Amino acid sequence: KAGVTQTPRYLIKTRGQQVTLSCSPISGHRSVSWYQQTPGQGLQFLFEYFSETQRNKGNFPGRFSGRQFSNSRSEMNVSTLELGDSALYLCASSIDRSYGYTFGSGTRLTVV
Amino acid sequence: QKEVEQNSGPLSVPEGAIASLNCTYSDRGSQSFFWYRQYSGKSPELIMFIYSNGDKEDGRFTAQLNKASQYVSLLIRDSQPSDSATYLCAVNKFYFGSGTKLNVKP
Image: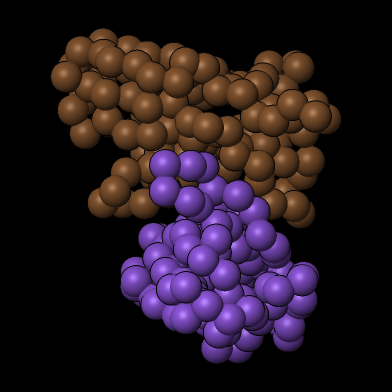
């Protein structure tokens, strides 16, 4: 059974640019959530999507957005990148909110 | 702001001992609690979850929940060096503590 797949694995972007990260959940999982992980802040919740609807949102500025497609694949977009956006971005999927998440390997974003 | 607090450690225990990891949370209405393990350079992986007060056992792992005191703990029996990792507590699925680093010494 394939796990959660995130692409790309690494990204280097310039301040002010925008970036789109992709996540393919485990087959049959309809809940997808996104997290930012940094050494100083730990795992910070960005948002959760379920059946193409954003159900929950963390405390991040509007520059961070996401969406989910009908096949449960999800994308996350960050506009007007700042140096502080450099982090590991993790996607996780779950059958529903009653169960824990399975995490992907993450996308390492570096903003220069 | 939903706060989830964990002692960052490191917590050092000898091989074969019981490791006790604790987590407190601020949202009294929290319903679900999860423990994840994260090895250095890897993604978190789910160990177990608990919803009801009391203990839940899964192999060498026991999760304990006390909603009145707003804490959840994870006990690891017969600790092995391979258990050395950072253990993350998550509340209501989305809100993670900063993790406790566990070192199991051979």
